[in-house]
Amino acid sequence: MPALETSTAKPLAIVVMTTILTGCSTLGDDFELERARQIKNGMTREAVITIMGSPPSEVEGGDHGKLIWLYSTADPLNVHLKRLSFTFDDQGKLYGLPKAGIIGSVNEDDN
Image (tube, rainbow, N blue to C red; front, side, top):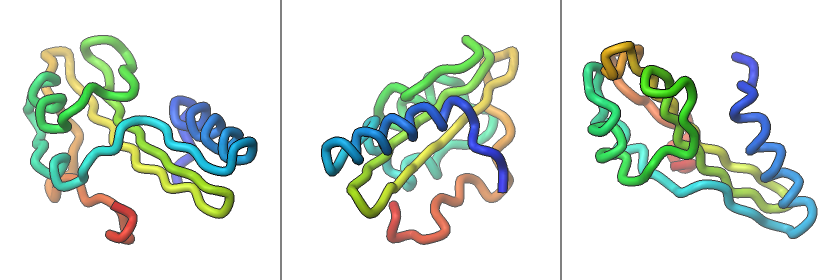
């Protein structure tokens, strides 16, 4: 299992602490994986943002880096996290998606 990236660890820690203090919390804007499944390699940053329907939660590396969408809900017993990261080359084109596209959650009930 890959290590939790620093950019994900900090927001997740905020969600967990808020949950402990208040009983429930939400971080970010929810997004639909069905929309994300329309995204393909070679698309521009603008096209990806349009399909996602909202600005990314985070931008890493400027124009040639990553766009990240993060949505998390938590209550005292559960934390649900959705995270999508899209990487762009030096020409602003998306690359690195698997040929099968975005698969989503192993448990489709989490979407």
